[in-house]
Image: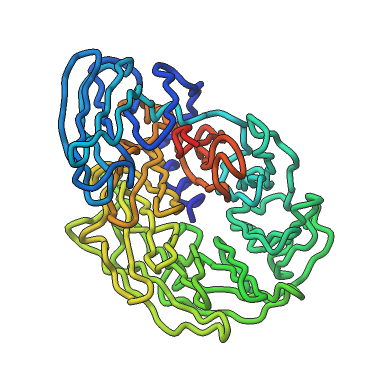
Length: 498
């Protein structure tokens, strides 16, 4: 649905601007060496600079005295209960700061730090992608970028700097691939949103091994080696893929020719051994898309729908199709519960949740299609914590934006902001937006540098590289794609401290 939404939104506004931006590192240049950092968004004078320590960097209740050695300004604070601190200065990013920490009259730390720039953690235009990139997945040291209109999947080696293109996996023309999931080390299943089919590809050889499609929808099957015909209506705008318990679950948007719900969505269950259809599971809501698993439960998001006013050129929530989350037992493939997400008339743009991502302790977060905000659900208890009436606000609720994708690592949630060209960070333990040292979203595109720009890159999907930075690999740990300028980019979330 992310790809469909992108096309849908920008076809109305005629706003498909292709950005040309070199990115790169400018200003600053300090490389931090520990848990005490001075951080600013970008280089220059009169910049907001936070000088602080991450959790556990200083003793709880200790006295922390921070002095700007270039201006003489001093600020004194105390170590918070989690061992962090972060006083704020206005200054030049060429300034240096002395951090003196004392506890019970004893000096614990006396160090000098320069300013680290968040912008320097971002690399842009690492590789040119295909037409209308829809999603990015990472497995091991390889990134897989799904290109909708190019009908292929680019495979990049992340151990090379910049990432090098290793292979291009091709699916039949007109497929419009939109998502994929891996089955072991050799295979992946790809949902083809327009051709009502699923392709089984070999990620080692690059071959399309099998195309699963009904005879009614079957067109050109080249280059797939085999074809398995399934009953009509087995797939209706397939959008999500999740392999679990020896099966592959395909979510289906089930939309009409105007991208509106044609009733509720559904799941198609395939055998990963035979690729035959095992079951069809009806969803409780419309526009079924993202899925995630915890233990033996598959959590399935039903996006709902949005409306567009051709006279005012404004989007709004469709209250006839509210979002929901279905809980499915992957042993029996039965829906045993659903979590309704009520819409709110006061926040008429807080709707169309997209990617459902969960923490290990059962809290699910989703981005939103029209505003820069997130929803939060307790998946285990079945309750909505932050719904459309009280979303977690990343930017604001007044301007058009799209928290297009989210990923969670080590208690931190990273979300792409499509319209404002940013990657924002949230601490899932507190739901604090912009936690130190991520004092503002990473500027990952043209509007990230200039919010007033008429051009933008459309920072879209992201994926986190598995492993520990500095131990299992060097360099960036987050990779993102831009939907408008069609480029690959990266973020080093460690700010080069590893």
